[in-house]
Length: 258
Image (cartoon, rainbow, N blue to C red; front, top):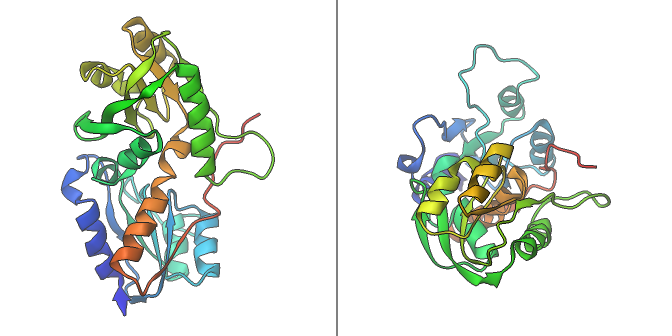
């Protein structure tokens, strides 16, 4: 049978811990040991995801965002790490190392937008490359449609929320940084991008980027990162054919939009 440590070793081959930022906390963060027959893959480990994993008879959750990030000073029933141990669920969390990894978060995002001949930038985190020429509003609409297909969205109500700052320049060279990458617009400019597509970008980043000639598309932290779950699941299925690997249906954007 496959063990938690077997899967952890494979995830380290996929996303080596050496790629992680110094402030990060990736790894096997909750280790209940034992054999694994079913794995749940998710972006976030929330109480709903813990209940989903237990209901689906999983022994392990593999996530992008760390379930333990800041030092724990106490632990109680409302803490997700506590809930995992209660349910005898281990947790492997691969964060900035998976952002930077080959086949990781940003390469999954680059693939969605048909990026060609991509290169690494922003200290390994981002990807930049050529795409078929498109206007910024068209790119924003594509982001809404394509990311919406790959996320757990409510059956009714708004789809993926996308905003953009448009310089009016046609986008031929696109940079992508998933999650909270808006502050890295200068890195995108330095590699000749026409536009940076990211999850989150604040007001001042949008103003400064547009002033310097770079368009911005912000499609949401959750929406730009959840698609990597399918890539993780495919990797684990290939490495461990005996495993049943499922992608979470309960991990959703924490925000409700109007």
